[in-house]
Image (cartoon, rainbow, N blue to C red):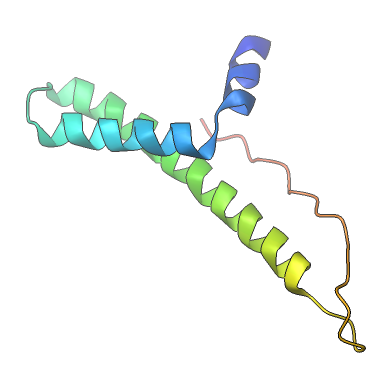
Length: 88
């Protein structure tokens, strides 16, 4: 189980998006069975969730970087991503 979580952590946004696009292409091709389509759909939903979380984290980081104090100077603060919810 630890190996699975390590693999998940190593996944980048770009890798997840590329895999998601490949899954969509495979399913749109119509050459996969219904059972295989369901497996690909489930994997795609997990990847879409991962990408959405990454985009939200990035947006929050940008908001922090753009935040300014009353004097107009940038305010630097650390960003801590919320823990990922386990879904399965």
